[in-house]
Image 1 (cartoon, rainbow over the protein chains, first blue to last red):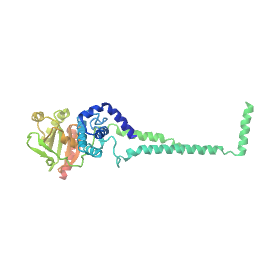
Image 2 (tube, chains in turn blue, purple):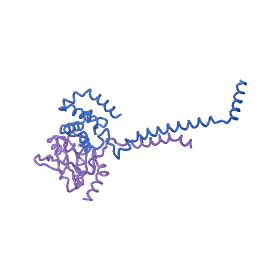
Image 3 (tube, each protein chain N blue to C red):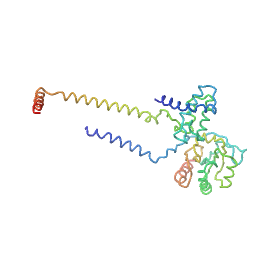
Length: 156
Length: 178
């Protein structure tokens, strides 16, 4: 899911992608792709609903410059993220790391899905049980019921 | 038993309501600094008044300081300036200024016109220390203890209320230890 979202966001980014290579030239396409991914995944602390690629805030530009500088220095994606998290806090990650504090955040959807599955199973099992219990009439009862229903038929 | 189960959706809705209600009125732009409990990042910055003098992170050692990030381009910094001048003059607060992404002449003019509350002014035209501090909106004011450890960050204007309710207790607390 996250990959699909990332792909979608990168497809949107690519519309204006030509501009980025003018400002941040890279020798290799791989590094450029990493740069695009990183600036799309990092969040601007000033304009909180924009990533640092979209944002025009000066701080976002500083962050882009730092990402660029670190990538040219040969830093890994994780090192770049860590460097920014150490300054601005976990807030800047659109995709927070899984740790003790964020465990609930990541696990809640799983809990909700499991809970839903359990409820569905419960409803199905219970309705099955009800079907079984209604079928179990004794022969006497069945004859009685047929007599009543048949009597009704003749009356109408 | 089954009747009790019918109340589950109501209970869930109420729980969700409580969670959402707790978020009302919280300021989403208030971010806790990532540096709380960590030393001020290492730096070497020129003095604002005296370009030949270079300051390092040891300027925070020895006493509790406020580190105030400001610039002449920042209207809210103008708002808080008079309060900073008063704090420095009347309460004897040790304030270190970080002139952030600014022009030296404009900054010097500002200080001579409005008063200079800073025991020491760092000049950071590229915003290097500002970036390392995670400054995302001037004015920001940090409480730094006598060991140079960042204890608190206030984003926004420092006024009497902020000083009395937030900053002064912290300055007292960490000043008492040192």
